[in-house]
Length: 246
Image 1 (tube, one colour):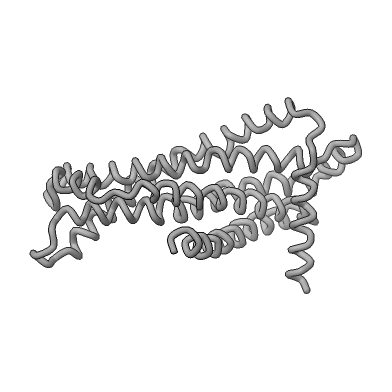
Image 2: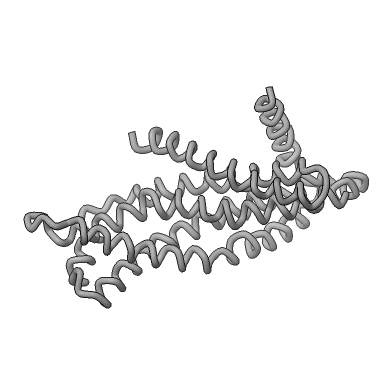
């Protein structure tokens, strides 16, 4: 019954979020701010993690390809497909769930316990829509860009590894990157990220919007936001992979 109660509250919140805005210009300005806060400020962590993951996948794949009958360019193929199919979509989404999700939950939760949301509603403002809708739009627009950035940076990280070490020649790596490339892998990855961004923002906002108590409860709502968002992202990954690739 607790699950049904939370599910009902979640969809009631979504109905408020997607109500018709009173002044579009205010939502536009708020969306631009959220693009910077949720997207641009996440550039650094995505770049750093992606470049190291690309390097690690290159080293581990090379280590496991001990059979002399297997061509060396398979290292590049493995790095490319690993990044495009899984890491740059699902793993990046889990990273953003930790960074962005906790931030959203704590921000809205603090506004709830400090009665700022109540003040907005007293003034006739649809607080749910004003606070959450710009975050959803910003995330669904910019998270796919971060995913594409992760793909390129991860592949470049593998290339740097080949340049700085002698595990594989850069020419073999580049040949593997180009070998039997399926462009729809990129579309598949970006499609998943769009769904993930919606899940992360709405679930984190839900946890913050219904926070009660004081600072301790805000901290708990942030933790719940990260945990539940991560679980739902993994569940969505399973469903979308089955629907799109099967």
